[in-house]
Length: 250
Length: 177
Image 1 (spheres, helix red, strand yellow):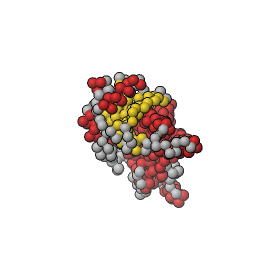
Image 2 (cartoon, each protein chain N blue to C red):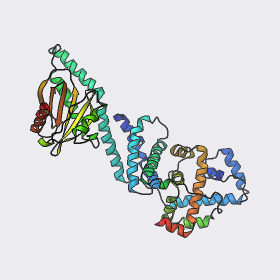
Image 3 (spheres, each protein chain N blue to C red):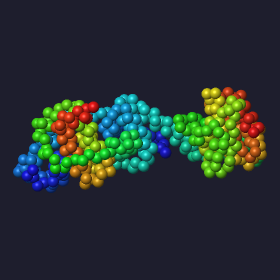
Image 4 (cartoon, helix red, strand yellow):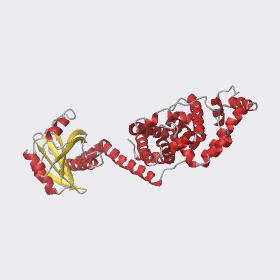
């Protein structure tokens, strides 16, 4: 080739990536090297062909929307996960209210405030679970698969039973977080609806079911055998009551 | 975990480079539909990692994520077929003369095929330099090759592209399929 220069220097020069000294040096070389002049010309020719061909492929307008939608759904999850912080705010608000009214400070019972906060949290957890890929971590209709799955994931053993014969087939379970603690979430199907049953240990005495609705979702909460249960769904209230009695009996 | 302020920052800083992200993915994956999916995945990944971005060249930061997402995708979906390095002849035929090259490169289809026929490691530096206009420093960041190696990689990539363009007709027929 008759050129003693490293061929790569040419590219650095072509791309304007040589320092001033290197570039000047290479220009001096160019004055006497026909090979490098040709090679440089070939590079320039190719660059202009690449430019002329307009190979740059921009994103379709729809992609931006898809990305934004993806971010939004992630954000929703994020917001739910951040709840720990505003949970404390809610608790603080409740405490303030309690102190202000001065009525229930010494009350040994957990009141409506607790229930309101709990219901809001349970419904959040339910909504969060309905996001794609969040509902079930262990997919099984077999209680003997679901129950052992919780071992090692929780510090308690939730009662797991399938009620397919009664119209509530067990779909699976997952570990969720309610009230800042890990809880078992059992997922039952009810026709086209899902019912989340959250279970966690409780030191308090058994309590009869209390129910309510919020944002179009029904919830039932009760305590039995040292466990607190809370079922939530958009299924009919009667369905929830039915599942509640099944769970309470068994 | 991003708060709404971070989300706004993401939308103003990162999202404007969506075209660059898509262009890189399109050329690395050699196709439209996959490129769109992988770009979307990479953008969401970028969103997730955005907390770890502490200023600097945001385009290079994003393209690095896109590039890595593309390579993982290729490894997963094409069983490494695309990852094979071609045996290149460093001291092969002399550079094609500019006229021959200009004629050969005159067709968009032919250029596309020649570019798509390059190994990904070469294709990415050409796309980043010629299409995206990245500096060597940015290319080094994006591709994780040492900055000292960018120039020689580009030199080999360009040479192979030139050869592919003026290469034998049967070669073109193979790529044209």
